[in-house]
Amino acid sequence: MTFTDTSVSVVVGGATGIGRAVAEALKARPGRVEIAGRRNSIDISDEASVAAYFKQVGPVDHVVVTAGSSAPGGGVTQVDLGAAKAAFDVKFWGSVIVAREAAKHIRPGGTITLTSGFLARRTVPGAFVKTAMNAALEATAKMLAKELAPIRVNIVSPGLTRTEAYSGMDEAAREQMFAGAAERLPAGRVAEAADVAAGYLFVIDNPSVTGAVIDIDGGALIN
Image 1 (tube, one colour):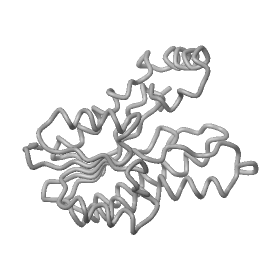
Image 2 (cartoon, one colour):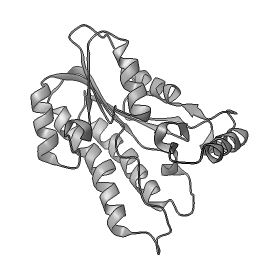
Image 3 (cartoon, rainbow, N blue to C red):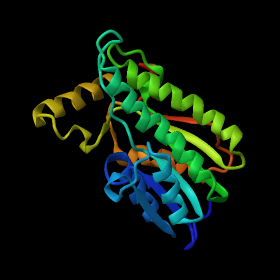
């Protein structure tokens, strides 16, 4: 798609991690990039908050949602269901709310790109909440692509990615985790945030891509 000086892109969750890499990539193009999130009082789980935000921003061209990746771990019999529901409210319902409200303001040729994760289609014991959230998002993104057409709706599914999400870990343990994952992955490396950001730009740029799930996981799903 063509970016001009009047193009407006919104990155929800663009202050950190993959979202920040997407925002930086978009800032290298003509137009304006808005970063939305809790840091500027946007609660994506709250319909009124999201509606007010997009009304204030006005017409937009591209909306990317990377917010809400955390979820409680544990098996079905052990997990804190209250925390699980709270995670769904942010990542799943928050993404749906953003898509619904953004669609009212997106100009012709515009796009919405959501974020899932490789656990949507990978069985990992103790991760059923993330699996359920991400799988639900991938199914919903395809429905949105149908219902909101000609707005193009896609979803990017990252695997393990080097971001500050792991900054709380001991440095040695963190590097050992990344090194071990790189050895196991067919790609032989763990993705950087910029690698994943390229996937968002791909679906924004290609006018024939909609309803797609873009896996950027180093080959985790075929491993």
